[in-house]
Image (cartoon, rainbow, N blue to C red; front, side, top):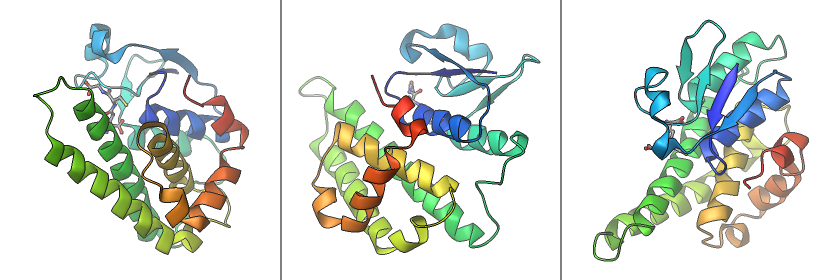
Length: 194
Ligand SMILES: N[C@@H](CCC(=O)N[C@@H](CS)C(=O)NCC(=O)O)C(=O)O
């Protein structure tokens, strides 16, 4: 399996952490997605992460790649049935934080005169509101066997620190403490952005 990803991709990081945690042999190839025309035949969206399988087919979208890994690993599932819909909703919120962070970043680096302060503000408000919400339900995320909501939340918070620090750590002591410990897992250390 070849995982096409990028050096700072937060979605690629979630996938990589999942592969490492499940002990799967994934070869990572770092690409510049904006020049990666070759990706089109694997994923017409031309986005990373994209996973190329040995049979020539591909799996796209981080959420689906993580699901695929979980289905083939033979390890205890990262999607326990207990509180299943709550888990999926927490995953959606963490992915939404990541998407908002990425959208904000894309807007911030646009040339002066082309960027929209209102759009940036909307993404920042979404990020802050969503992290604050996760703090209110932090007890459902922390202190349990490894699960997918933990991986995507840890990657979302790390990407927020990387691109846009709104002081969430001061407002969210539970997530702050938990995420610092989670960041020391070998999978998180090995996938730190370059
Ligand atoms: N829903 C996708 C989003 C992937 C995504 O937005 N990847 C970014 C890099 S982090 C990308 O490929 N951007 C290039 C582009 O959209 O043109 C997923 O979860 O994998």
